[in-house]
Amino acid sequence: MPELPEVEALAGFLREHAVGAVIGRIDIAALSVLKTFDPPITELQGTDVTDAARFGKHLALRAGDLWLITHLSRGGWLRWVDNPSAAPPKPGKGPLALRIHFFTPEGATPAIDLTEAGTKKRLAVWVVRDPQQVASIARLGPDALTVTELEFADVLGSTTARLKTSLVDQSLLAGIGNAYSDEILHVAKLSPFASSSKLDPESVGVLYEAMRSVLSDAVARSAGQDAARLKGEKRSGMRVHARTGLPCPVCGDPVREVAYVDRSFQYCATCQTAGKILADRRMSRLLK
Image 1 (cartoon, rainbow, N blue to C red):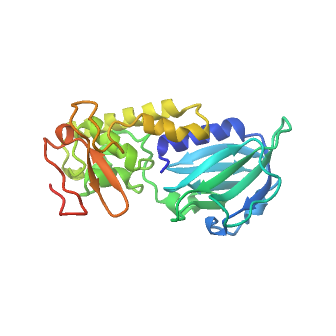
Image 2: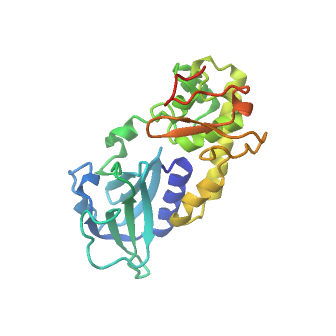
Image 3: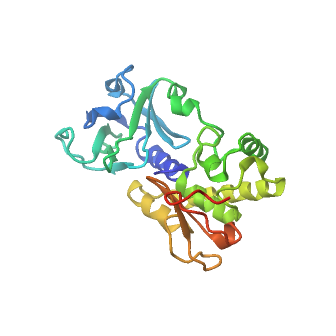
């Protein structure tokens, strides 16, 4: 799933390439992707793109008085197409969900494709007059890239959830998902199952600095990358996430995994849990 650094990079890419263009034809290949009907998406046609923004893990384009907002979810992605097909796509064929054509001041006619891989279709698109009309945006907590350390401490103190759960709960903190929460906890050398509200002030400070450094580094590495390269850039910077069995870059011990029904996360027992192995959720209860 694209998280804060990738969505921030996509917003920057769109600010550079789409702002100033006029929205042309909009092709809907998967009707289920649209979560709003008033105003209709066709109202975007003929409007000037004036901005691109990020709200947590939501990506947004502003055009006229409207916002087109998307959440790419786990299997979604955005592609910039310099020479899109003139023929409308056939609904239900392939991963394409939505295509937006543009007319640029230079006379080019590119498009952006919103695609989704896999069978679980969760890609969502809204057309609204105010981003706060999107329920998942209205529920967002403070942004992980701009939250202060004091606010961060208050967020952690407000919940008894485990640290892993707190970091990915968008109503507590906006922008962090499964991958970067693994990385942040590894850098902070904290257990994913530590209680959020029981962290001492020193540990809160360490976790805050780890979050800032991991996200800032990822944003810096992603900046200027075109959309096609962002996934590879994200994978290349991972220390523990999706590296089960490989050596921890800090201590050399194998990275371990806790798996759930449809997802998993990774950690280093030596660096984060004083050598304790966290039980696989599929096999037994979690160890504290």
